[in-house]
Length: 215
Image (cartoon, rainbow, N blue to C red; front, side, top):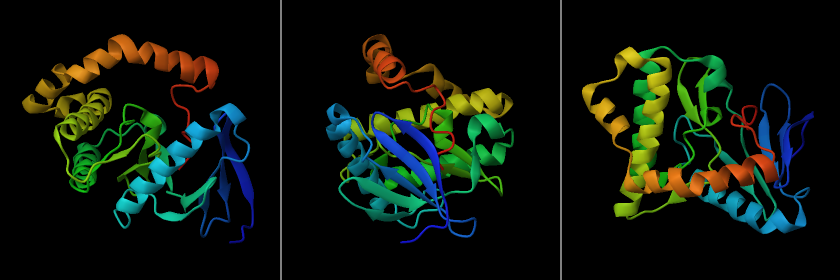
């Protein structure tokens, strides 16, 4: 695989992400080579979680296609679009399509687990939704009880974004979902999230919208 250019999009203790190739056929490469030694095991686990999810979702619109995965690199297609916080989608059709996209992911046994992050939602050139960064995704073919809880949280995070950008279009059912976070979510907010913020912001140096260029 040859590239006409290479642009660094992100670099942290888990490695780096680069945009390769020209405008006709760009690729995104996640490379663990520069990862810190103490973070390499975690980085490799996250890479293979993403690879597994993208392989299961192969061919799904709104999801980057997996091109190649090796021990320390993952190559996938680039999606031409803008992160949600930059595009600020106010069209109800965007959120209807985003809900359909989520349902397709869930039917295939994939929960994303990181959709509260606006940078992981894209608005493509034609105004459609797309989702990136599947490092925390979980593949559960049997879709048991825990899967259903996490799938509901995926939906609830989408509805939080809809409340931000298109609040007048929320239905009564969607308002009820927003008002009733799951028990695991409430426990996470009280216990796990403070630790997560310490690790991601202080140790890893991530910002809330980290990854906005990683399309």
